Length: 272
Length: 284
Image (tube, rainbow over the protein chains, first blue to last red):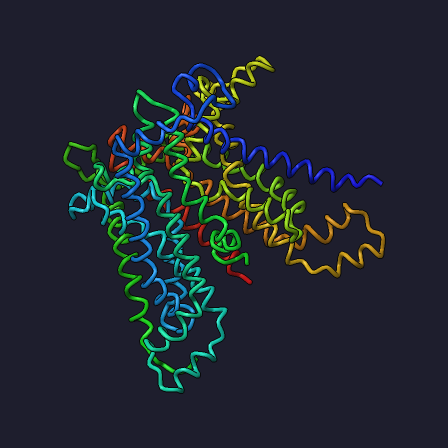
């Protein structure tokens, strides 16, 4: 008996793999082409690997500085979001306080709010506060989505830890901060690692604020720089492809570690 | 826990201050701006609710809203069935399925801006392989800079590429959570595979499908980066989705007050949708 269901699913998955991978292949191939190969027609395999597309923008132009800014921004974002995130997640998970559910909903609304809606106020506010065109400004603004994310995901993880352990620690005379440091944080270590990686990726990927609230190579991250490059009239497509590949690298590196947690992270913990 | 070891407000406060700084001032300022006629460079004038009045009769705004919802609907119509089929093909926890799922997941975490640049490289008439192949084989003119319909469907295709894997992941989890017993007894009773799908699999995955639908809907409604790079507002405003319209109003036309009015309206829609989504998602 021919198992047509199995055959159909293999064909479907195969087509989907081609559909998913071909654009990525095309991006990588384009990043190695010479200018002539890109414009002179559609070439599926380049004659040779042209590393100039990576070298020139990163080392002879300002894009190396943009890349550095992206790294600083994303790592500083982790440092800003994780400590308050852990404390607030503990409060929401373990302690009852007035209107806690409303506050939790309010946090989530901030995560879901369309960044485009806040564009003008931030622009004016940041000019007024001297935060315009600084990395600090971007670090602060990115927390509007990332901090609620951290709270929500860590709350889920803390909910899953039985409270008896903490109770036992308090009976032994631990203060809250000792308990946090010696018991809760070690238990949460994998969750904190996952959260940090996600915050890194979200911050790295953010474009709208990065491109509109910064202008100079001292502060602008890679996404903003790439957008400005693309809006120029004279455009070298293979360099854009090369910079896009560079912008993808952190994702490619961490995706294996995050694989199990992506669904949880992007559905507010509804899927485990 | 009954014991009060620490004041919860103390733990809650740092996060509240940071997010509050980002959230309250801009919302109030937006609300203030919405009552002003403020074109950049000209001092603002108080005009009350005039911006909202104008909004009600702005054909471009309603067109933009309609385009946004058409985009959402089109994405859902393709992504949910496709994701469901792939999830049913890939839900078993074998080595090969795990590897396939990891590969399929790659587009989800790529910067949206780069998703836009990838598809720009794919579909630009002068350099892209898709227009090239369509022209060579089918003699079909594919140009997102000229045809509004093609531009619209290219943004849908891009979103399908970007987010179908998310639907797959959610539905794989939903399928894996259905216990095996109903399937065993259905086998014994000799039920057809369609009946099994219709009466066991689909009801069992209802919750997962709902989550995927709501979250995808929210994200698709807010879409900005990819479309901004690929088509901006597109030929004949074909891809003038709400976020794009807001940014265009501010940056090209410099109408800050009107932009703020649209932003408030958009925020209002999003808050309602978030409320519905969270009610469903946290129901368990």
